[in-house]
Image (cartoon, rainbow, N blue to C red; front, side, top):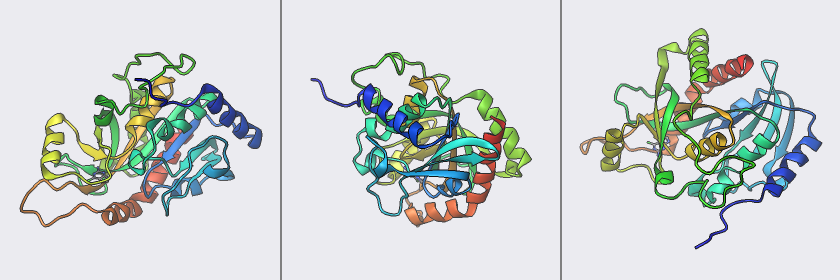
Length: 284
Ligand code: 6GU
């Protein structure tokens, strides 16, 4: 059975050409701002802002409270483009829509993607507020068919069977680690494996235990599809999770995962994360 689950090359190209006609900036770095981390885009200087609804073929944001816009500008003197608001599959977007911006970045000659997200901590040695450099991921939906690369493969983006064993760039991880230490984030820096679930519900206790056994250190509802599409077209990727809460692993616990706690932690760490990402961008 053939499903139409992809966009046409010409659409991505039209979007990229439209953006290049509307800004003189030619960033090499794209940044996806995760939940509660959109403040990063506000730090940019010499901003050119494009609401998603104005960009041809771009997916539209539906969620209230999420700013949906692409922000071009400079961070520490380095040009970059930020997605202020991303698309999640739990909102009902098909994965080719969730990942649409990545191929647009590729066609605009971006070569590095920095993805950030809020995640629940599975690793018992992690604390709320830790910053985890993502060293690998488990794309749980992707392993069972919810993969943005399913369907027609356009060789202009990448090969049919792309490698993922080098998904998270080791040099960028080393750069981020060094930068984190220089920026006073060393005391709460971790590295680990991010596991994606589709959401929108938080995990059951049994699910958390299962994910821990699978080798995941953190769990969230984003990132893996964007990274898979970025690696398919050869972008280098740095992934950063903010551990916003510890997952509930105990039937006697009174703790309950909730979005409020997620937002409170992002608020508390947003300045640290902004400093870290800006100084990494400056050194790329
Ligand atoms: Cl506990 N789970 C998931 N799936 N996503 C999260 C989270 C937990 N905390 C922040 N994002």
